[in-house]
Length: 413
Image (cartoon, rainbow, N blue to C red; front, side, top):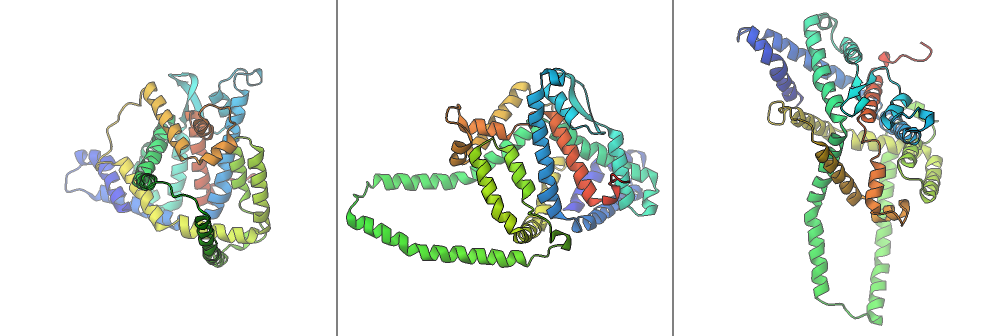
């Protein structure tokens, strides 16, 4: 699958112009670029195999997301006040998260309203990645190295920062995913409704003492089986988790769940019930830190980061970059009305996915349309392209720093 993606990239972004200046029989240059891309993937695969996924997904990623949400909430509180010199929310957020690669430029919505990622920063980062991944003789081939670098910068990163960071793109993606999941569940929901309707048409069975006794006895008889099934599942999970290999430096580390709990507290609306519930849930997990650490390594390394996930990501990337075997034609961004519609559909889809009990606990009774209000609160921060670009830049820096620790400059360096 990765070879198919490389072949499409070379055909569309290299051979499309090189074939015009070179005879058809001269394919050595294109083949050499393909060989470089294959070598890059193989070298990157070795790095990924040695990556500490638990540290990345359980410790670092929740911390980055928590900081992002906290800064957004702080920007909303300070925007338009004298403390922020009457700056807008985007401008305050940009000042709260300074980054050498991100700047704001004049846009259609006003001065300083659109983010811009410095291409020099991206080229320097990609060039250092190529230096670490390519053999010395290939890295010294400046023409080939430059072409590969420009493909990564102008095709991959340009698509991420110019399109993926757009609020309407995030809203439309979430809405399509949730609505597709609802469509897959629709037949099962319809079947249950038909069964309930058929049972209602048969009439209500009169409640008698004998019927009550039969129901109680039937329920009691299932309790041992239920406890046996639950005990077997817990025992199997425990023995599987403790057998997971854990690096020695995690032995004396506190519970790995702390960053996740902090992220949940930050994302959810302020609620004493949630705060106390998370506190009481975190206490036993902290006491069982060795087990939770082993469980995290088992779930992440054996259940989450698998070959099927890699195939899914590659398939999505191929369909996104080349939906019909060719790059999609550039279409204009949706109109403001269409963007508002995508936002409404996204909020409605998230609201339908929220459990009713969670909505009743987190949203006061006097709020209109409580599920949508909670969904809007959970999606805050995604309405700003500036905030989305900052988040994506931090995530790229995080992943690059984990895969290539030699590129990270410490405070003492």
